[in-house]
Image 1 (tube, helix red, strand yellow):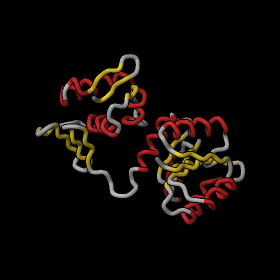
Image 2 (cartoon, one colour):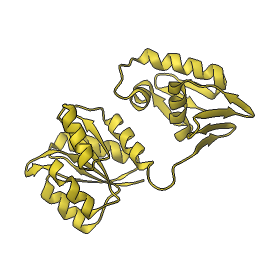
Image 3 (cartoon, helix red, strand yellow):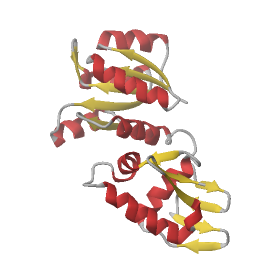
Image 4 (tube, rainbow, N blue to C red):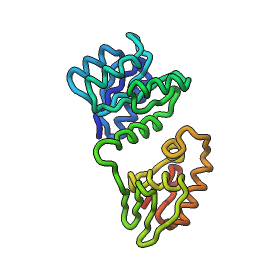
Length: 216
């Protein structure tokens, strides 16, 4: 669980972002202006700030260096309607850790938050579940005593399941987490699930009818 400050002035967007982050077990606080953001930062620092750039009292991109001074260990995820590469690059150069462009899928935002939170402390080296071991540094899979070859997408897909064993993932969630901004369709998931089943055992990845897939 992380503490997250959502700085967004559009009420509907703020509510959706907060709800999805809370469902992911985070403690969330919402504000709608730069002034309110600083009021909160004077009280405490958050693990993550989800920061909309265009706010009623100014351009929040200009505030990123100041946020870094207030809270040097806080991750900043920029929410922006700006699509030009120069704006995204400028935000990262100012000190943001990642960005999501509006309109966005809330599940993608949650995935981005998870990704930047994984940077805290020592990086996780392995994901282990029963006799399945995924080495995140060497990007290798061992099942029992056997080394199994995976394609890059197969590796990333299996990593999602291993991060939350027994959780049911919908096709849409898997597409957002693994393919992110790439062109994608539901058929991709079926193809890769079938391939993974052949490599790790059909009985390990089960279909939850009408929902998605689960690792067992």
